[in-house]
Image 1 (spheres, rainbow, N blue to C red):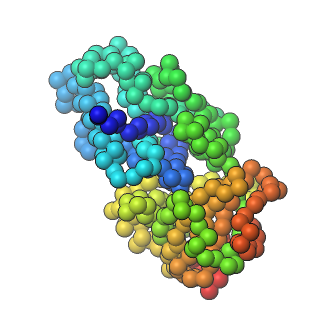
Image 2: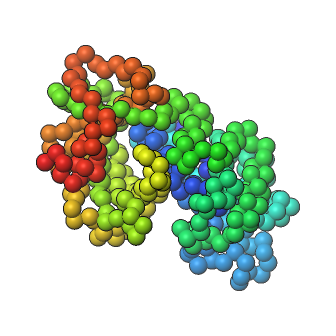
Image 3: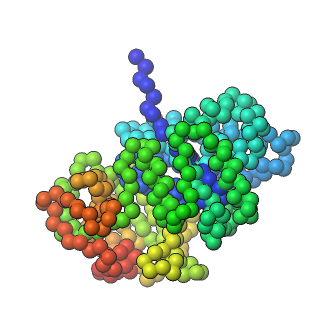
Length: 371
């Protein structure tokens, strides 16, 4: 009897230029991993080829040649990722987060040409639509959040705001007909926009809806035996960098999960509204992580901690056990819908709430506030 292949969920994050995909994908990967999933990210294929030195318009015998190679490369990469995920010795649900998907090319070359491109790869538009479990379209900042539309953070992006809006509309139209298509517009601030992306993800993967607020507690009688057997364990190294030219707070983070390393760069900028900061995060390479470490803020020390994630009493709990710069600190963070929500903990736990206490913020800990 042949053993059926394990299911892999392919989820596309797409949208117009400067929609916030890089941040959303970086946040989504960590969010899903913390909740017990095996996640890989398929990078944007067009940007990968263009930044490698291939022009989509110059040096080809005809305009269809580049698109044919792009689709071939994309499909091969996604197939290989699924094969590698299934080969992993894990019982976790398997997810591929796709930074754009096969149908995005329709927005650039038109439907009739793409039909021909797909035929060259022995597939069709309906077949390509069926490949993906869900499509999440993030609307360009040029449509509703014009003050945040920039092109400097992507060397393959050059569109004016008007061009970005037109491209956004064509991209959305390219995915029309997908049975699980979600549009995330700019009706809220960017932090809420990312939460709405997570909400769409959790619906697709049949997970509890993400909550937006957190309460924080100090664990006074920590013992590893308190952990459930299914707790997800993640090793984290978090380093604060010198502030940017505009005064933004910067940090890098290395996460180790099941022997796999991932790296993230984060910027937090004041918005002028009390208690509200704009946060941008992206996944980076090991090489960029090493380079960024040279900018470490000399007034801080890297934070080393082990995080355990699990659900209890209807809430998602994160237990952070610190090793450096303090070694006797354990913090529990709890996702809540409202700060007044009732939270239940195991009877043997002794906790003290420290929500809002400055010295228990990670930046303060890195500066030695509890030393």
